[in-house]
Length: 300
Image (cartoon, rainbow, N blue to C red; front, side, top):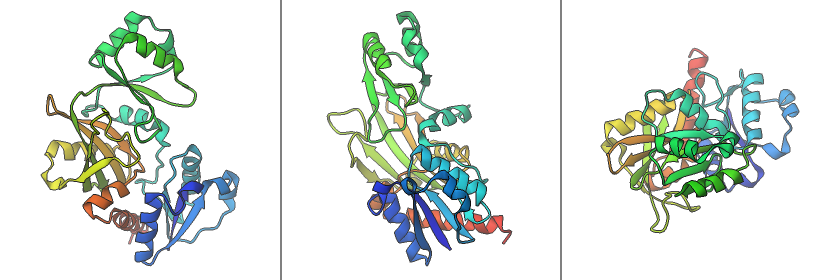
């Protein structure tokens, strides 16, 4: 058995997921092979040969990596088991929010609107009405697909909003407006096979409203058995809607109301950030879950 990992060239041997997966695979007697997306054309994938009964995991979040994963699952699905169940493929991270919104009917999500170029030509009255539906100013403007807080702006006035809307590259990024939570607690729950495997809490720096505005955010381990049932259930529901073995769920608890709100369901996710403080071998659990899925599909 081989675990094939789709990676970007600058992730090889340095990205936390790449390091964790390789270590966990080798510890279980599984070979670890990297598919570097800059070195492979999509046409190459059709004729590539793979070890039967092997596993496929996408680390890179690029659009090409997502296309590679989808094509490999389609063309070589009889040989490669992915983390998606049934064998479906998550879209690249850029459009993950739209999928979350589409399927989150009835779930407690942060009040949000998807923004496009038509917003640039709206009148102040129209913009104020839409912002008011989200709780009013200040408001969060977020360009999706970035990390470490990049692309996240707190907008305080209608004039500032209009300026920001005019500067966005809508052909490159999907953009959302989201209610601003003045005080909140930010939990990341790692869900594997319909259960919470690990949990951490992000902490805001003193000079920023974002919890992940730096390359190495401050996080602490959380005993997930102590989390309120509403938080756990929200995380489980979010991942179940993505048809995935694995999901990293961000939940913000509004400190004014005490209500947990779904912020994001990340598939795949950067799980090593939860491995270090918790001491939990999340990579190993992911591999073992994929192996169980493989056996179920083979009728064993």
